[in-house]
Image (cartoon, rainbow, N blue to C red; front, side):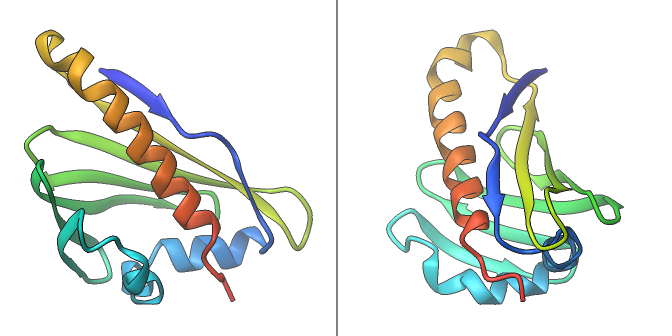
Length: 137
């Protein structure tokens, strides 16, 4: 398994508010308009799963497999050309602020590792940036 981690993102909202929003994927409605249409062709979600079609990767469905209130939401792939797990960790900084880090673990074949590592790292960082900009009220 290859492990990728985003940088730590500071969030100007309390840990409980961030967790509450991230643990119910229906809250993705708030950011649906920020999804780049040139990269993502489909974007559907419900409480426990999200599906996106990403060019040139294809269809990816993530499902929440574990919730550790108020600090972590874990995802697993239900459909993906490359199976992986994703964790969103949220820790308190103060009573009104928190920090977040994303971790992705993927079983990448050796022959593909060089080609997909860079785009995976870049994509993970972009997702972390987007999640850090959400209003978690």
